Image 1 (cartoon, rainbow, N blue to C red):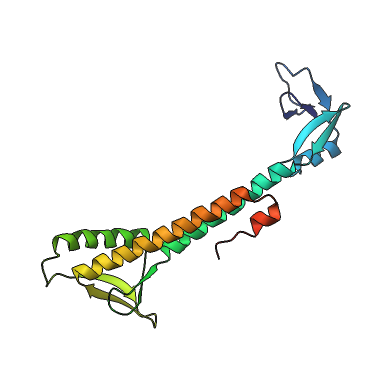
Image 2 (tube, helix red, strand yellow):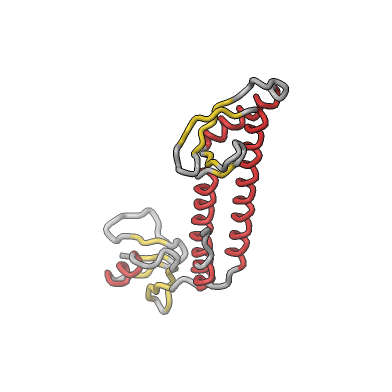
Length: 185
């Protein structure tokens, strides 16, 4: 096996090439296996004519940890938003679902409620669960629909603000351990 630092790749000896880099070195099977099994952030270098696996820098590892934790926080935020919210628009607190479909249905009902605000007979059905966890398709007046919509938006904005705050903490954390300690819960 051969390796070129300038090309950053291996050149198997059994293959023919039209041209090869000038900086080729011969690599032992042990060196090749070490290179292939290295940490994905580790780099390869040639030192004194030998292939060397260089451990990733602490900065690279910290950035990787930030990226991983940032993704976890983003997913947790999405899950929290689509997991639903509480509203007492019906008098007692109920849980409302908030998947993308639920959001679209609630938005449509809220828009319809705006034009029906003077019609006391108007109502819209929305899925919600009572304190016991029983789901019902309950009728809501225009004012109740608007209240549910407002509560959903407020809860979403609170969760988005929490997401922003945690992402800022991740960006400012100076160690992998500090980054890992930042969690949604």
